[in-house]
Length: 174
Image (tube, rainbow, N blue to C red; front, side):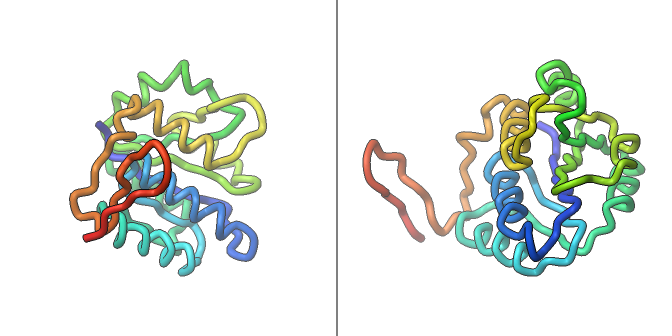
């Protein structure tokens, strides 16, 4: 399976903190290794880092990233850039080709993304050609990328684990 990192661009701290946190949580839960945030927001970093500390894994969040530099460095290191947008190629038509790459940087925007990203990306991918949430597009993309295998991922270092149950809530804490 490829190494996957998410680049969140267009984040407005006063408006997007909750959504960006959820982008990071979805990325972590569905198989990504980390998230770069093209903004300064210690609240987002702290929230996601707290989840990782309690629920396990080695997912990281790095804020204050310059998006253009991040994309250029990723490509220079041999990585592939996938921009999720409703204007791209249909995901179902390109996911097999994308899956063949070893290092993926998935770009997820907030609001209007810089036009340059369309030319810098190796793939502009549309999960659907309708307006949709960046969280849902990331979740669906990662699920298709990993073919559902991420849904049974275990975190051996987790301090809290959910025990699946038909009704109610059951957890185990270490």
